[in-house]
Amino acid sequence: MAAADPGKGERVYRKCAACHKLEEDANSTGPYLYNVVGRDVAAAQGFGYSGAMTAHGGVWDAEHLNEFLIKPSGLIPGTSMSFAGLKDVEDRVNLIAYLNTQGDSPVDFSAVTEP
Image (cartoon, rainbow, N blue to C red; front, side, top):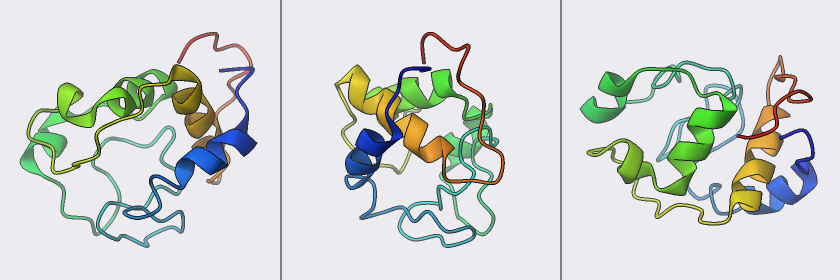
């Protein structure tokens, strides 16, 4: 994570932009992703999450985001997120690093060696 490239992650984010916005409280087909890194799962204000997502719980830290982004329905069966996933670990790490820049309090990844 410490070597991730947020600039490359911004390019990967284009795959997310059809359903997710980066502005706070700007829900779309999916919940807004502003401040998503470090946020509780299913906690974007005003978004109607699936029962599977609300029951899942946890926090969107780097490890949890990485696992989810591999195949969302593989981690949370019954999620309404239909995205197939990102198979390339570098794409996932870079995307997480980019999302980390999109918030008020970015997480310090300097000591994190794996997502």
